[in-house]
Length: 240
Image (cartoon, rainbow, N blue to C red; front, side, top):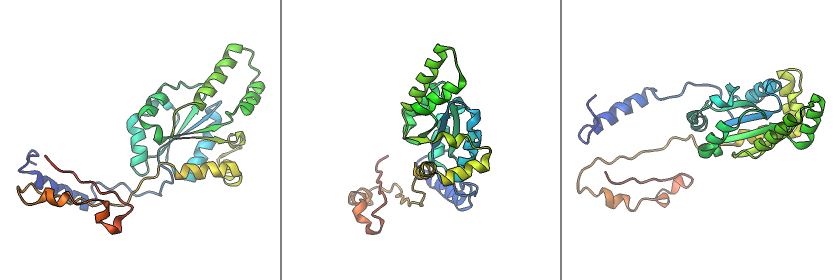
């Protein structure tokens, strides 16, 4: 193709129009994912959250599970909201460093949803008592990290019962998510988060023909102009 200039833009436009019509920009078909964004499941131990993560992914038709928060990039979070099928579930321990979480939340906190499992004060105290930790410094660190996770900047902070991570296998965990009222409410909440409008839009493009009345026409166009599109946005862009 020739370089994109004011004289060749229509050629580029027509080529991309053909590519779009032929499905070059379509996303591979897959079972509809019920959520968008990044769901971080946090507990005392990452390993015991494995069955829970798989069960939640089944309930939400979310195909991607990440087991290291540090591996997630800003691009991953952005795509998890704006591209179908790219939502993510991430497993995290309260002892994990919050550095990347804080970095991502600076720009994309609206796309991040944190689900705590057994991290409330009562459950945490019970779990730590069973661990029989004699090192007071470690006990203090664990409690401090749990509190830091509860204060993490995000779109939604949710709490699952500790029992959600104590089921014997994935099928039993799915059963728990469907039968426990609190768990059902959490899953339903996640399914409604970060939803975007996937309906196709319309672009009306005016070639740069001087004096044809483009600006005069566009100056009177707004949402009220299109009475059948009262729930859609109308954006007008003028100039070079």
